[in-house]
Image (cartoon, rainbow, N blue to C red; front, side, top):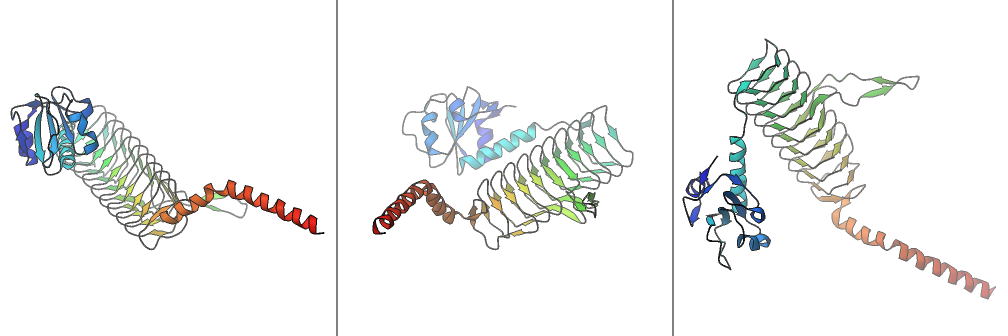
Length: 348
């Protein structure tokens, strides 16, 4: 698709400086810009690239003032927030790339399933009995949706997503390739012989609106009740969410986070990659957890945590300084012990 500078400025409520008829057909980082590309500049440390870029149009903050001559082929669009406006354009571009509505063959759709309007269903999709697919949903090839599950309007399920029976997924969600929603929780009880008996997992997973789930992430069904992912949550690739976990609104988890059963995370919590969170605890709204931390107990007040077991980040930094000095301290201690032993020997 092609857009002129004037069209883009109108969409972003911006002001054109240069050729309002300049045309772009693609997006590019400013340092890699080519003719016909649209770029943006918001971080001052990249300013040097705007004086040499080959991009045809660049979105900049309305406070930007060039310190050197700009390329004669470059048109600026000045906006209040260049980064936010470029993100908006990316959303428009992505929307233009959505699959056209239709049902590819072969696929299986149970006669009792309800399919909304303007839905795309790719080849080799399986849709079970009494499934509901909302208007405008996109179900990419090789996806499985078990019986009784509900998929909200405008939700996208990428290739290879597995949705078990009776799962509820809200509107405007994105679930990336290979994610599994509703696998059994890790529930086992040892019997008298010390053998693990499986505890049936009969609950489900409820994913509310505007949630994004990364590739190959797994979210287990509840033992009873629901594992619940609330509105606006963002979960990266390769995360494990155990049975009966609750994740509060607009919380974000980076890759390889693991959350044990029945843990409850509050709103606006940020969790760094490879963090492990123990089960049956609560993490307060607004908590921030640094990557590779371990959370063994509840966090009652919002703070920034780091380490295993995690402690307040400033305490961790002070402790780490001491830890780095341990070899030197041990050498000094050894020398002191030697001196003391020599003094004892001389006084005996």
